[in-house]
Length: 87
Figure 1 (cartoon, rainbow, N blue to C red):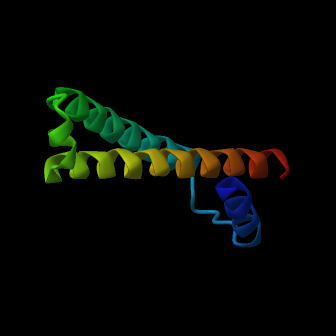
Figure 2 (figure 1 turned 45 degrees about the horizontal axis):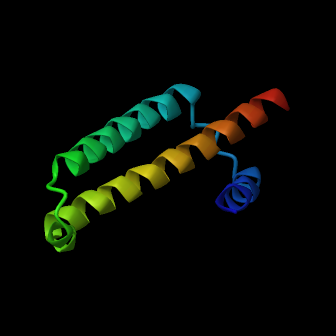
Figure 3 (figure 1 turned 180 degrees about the vertical axis):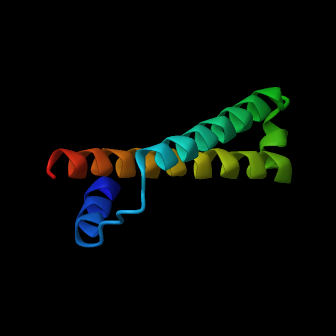
């Protein structure tokens, strides 16, 4: 669903300044942050009461944000590739 909305918006407002290199760099940062959050989550105690702490919530939020960033960057990369093919 997000992919469809972004594709429609980006077709209307194509950004020529966005490069594949920049998207790759941002994807690498998002992947790194996701791995950090994943490792941090695994390092937490497996106690049920710990899942109600602020630290757990922060790590979970970081994981969700980086996952969304990865999806967005993948969509942008796909759209950029598609635009390049249709030039």
